[in-house]
Length: 464
Image: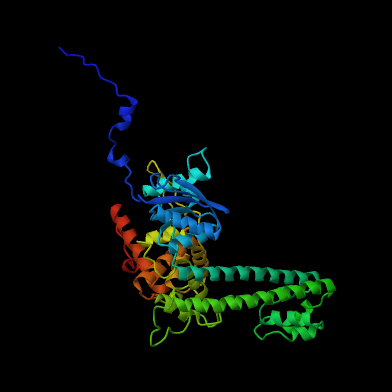
């Protein structure tokens, strides 16, 4: 006869005290961690409650207050710091903490959102401190100080180029308002012929035949056609606007030249390798690109900094290589594998999976400047007679062009990673080698498929 035994119910306190499974426990990874909520005028800092009677403090953004913040963290025996990447307000504090010897983790503000409905600066810094204590935060990649300086100057140069291009548009607008259709007969208004004619117009020349005689011999249009395009109204207000636009164009050109001098100095500070005795060989293109650095030998300076010649990769010129080096540096040990590197650049396929079903494999939205440069380099491979050019054209035949460009940029990123980590030069096997390998793979797959269906592939020559 069975006996019914009453079961004692556990109280709420006993339920909370029961041991949890191994998957539900969080180990303390950084016991001496603090969290900082970054603001434009003040920063909120949270340390463990047992380190100070006032575990959360507010510090102003002035230099003296930041120094007091660093002194207080040392007094609290803090070793690891987590802060949000808010605008550019984090940079002075980050540099000060890094120089003081703290392990600083710069985290994305989207990844550390606090509990909904409880948004405040105090709660944010406490939430950062708790997440950092249990090792749930991952710091962003930031290269060495020398590379950061190079990156800042290169980005500033890009900004100046964009400003300079706007004044070229202003100049073209002034010419169009005077019905001077020069931009319809020459390709580049700021080329050799375009600048000679525009500067002569600003100097006071109005004779169309005299202006047309300034054409370069490489221009396809003849002097008669150029002279017809230079017959305008020559209104004073539009001439004044064009003169101002040309003066601003020249002013930005001077600033860009100063940036090139500074880039030469910063690349010299990164020199860690010597040029080979036989040199780097001939460059892929005889004349550099329009906006490339021409003040010094950029290709040799990049080799001395990285130990490899990235311009040997088809599609990558000196400007692209310099942009990549300025963004990621030459030491890629922060990325354990090439997959980590391409994922950081936002070029690898996504893994949005639910219930075993792939919901989306699109790449994540990322504003990585190095990835943008590689996408531009991938577009240049459309007509390249190389293995990468054949690979890109094969992808364009299989998928739409934006996806093919991203996939080719992903391959370029992998090549750059292996060259910088292993120090091996790039060797182009050629377009024909790639086509032969592709044909072998197709035949192998077709043979295997035919054998599965009970057939056998026979070459046409054997049948005849």
